[in-house]
Image 1 (tube, rainbow, N blue to C red):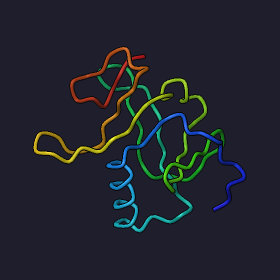
Image 2 (image 1 turned 180 degrees about the horizontal axis):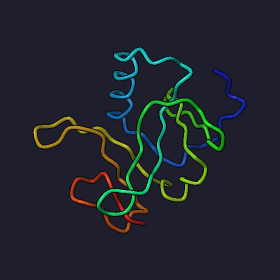
Image 3 (image 1 turned 90 degrees about the vertical axis):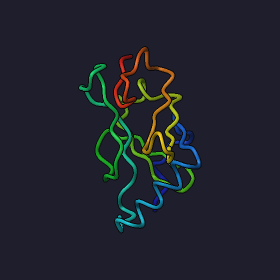
Image 4 (image 1 turned 120 degrees about the vertical axis):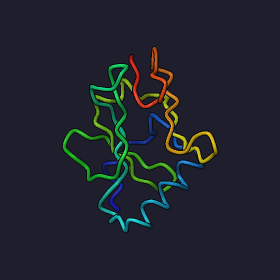
Amino acid sequence: MSTENITEKAPLTLTEGAIKELNKLKDQQEISDDFGLRIGVEGGGCSGMSYILGFDQKKEGDSEYEIAGIRVFMNKAHGLYLAGMEVDFKNGLDARGFTFNNPNAASTCGCGSSFSA
């Protein structure tokens, strides 16, 4: 993997639980090293904006970061909404899945997958 386009410090963090689950998913789905984790936002959801989280290839206009060996792609325009955010993975009886702790969210919906800024 070339590191010439990787920005120094990622504006968000992945918890140990999220890193473990992402590596497991990447291995199970046999995802190529050409792909990285895309994190972003899009219009929609009950609070106005929804999170994007999935494996994808780098696109024009993306910033690239590396967090614990995971390539992370983010559209530069999304940095304003995601700066300081923590992505976690919960695996309990009451909740299972990725969660987003976003200090920029003025409000979130009950499911936690959408927010307003």
